[in-house]
Image (tube, rainbow, N blue to C red; front, side, top):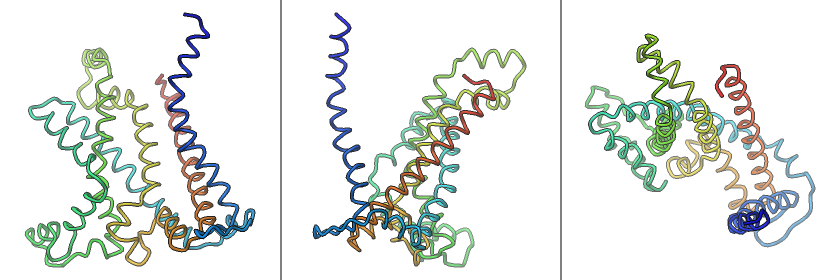
Length: 294
């Protein structure tokens, strides 16, 4: 078969994906940028305002507050989900009795919809009747904790539901990475006198560096896009204490019917997320080169 025929076959196989990519990724990106330059409403009325939406955005204190709330969730969720995912993968990889069952149990919540997850945890976090408070009362705590309406506890309640829902996916990625590490490395380390702790620190973790970069980047992106848990559990409250930037975009676009400003917010969020991910990737890549991991 000639090279031309090989290329033709390859492009023919790629064509369906490329069509979907253009239709559902590139076209919406271009349309969003176009809309962000207009004062655009649901009624079809539009007025070209150039960069005025972006100027208004810079002066909008509610937008910056919601962006900070999103950053805060990224800060508390990313290390938690990455570390717990690694620990669960290490536990399952020990191949103890029942490890297959634990692997399934840890991953199953990832298959549930966000509506089911938030409904379950909202019930568990209810004051007076919720399972969490009932357990604390059983242990001797007398005070009633309002998990979803107290600014001091709301974010950690959302984090708990998110961890239970999504940590299984990170565990699967780490587990795949663990199973790709050559056994010869552990045997060589054992012959050199390395105990299990030293093998973990000097063999397992360095060999998982690429998987860790992938998991961390995916987690940062997912945390920046958080909306469902917050909307269904707290509606952004109490007050606006847990309102994220995606929720603010939704409220601006669909409640205030200002699609131009909402599109501008979406582009700013995309740029911020892209910048953080690229910065994170470069820092980890430089650390990998310094450590001599190829």
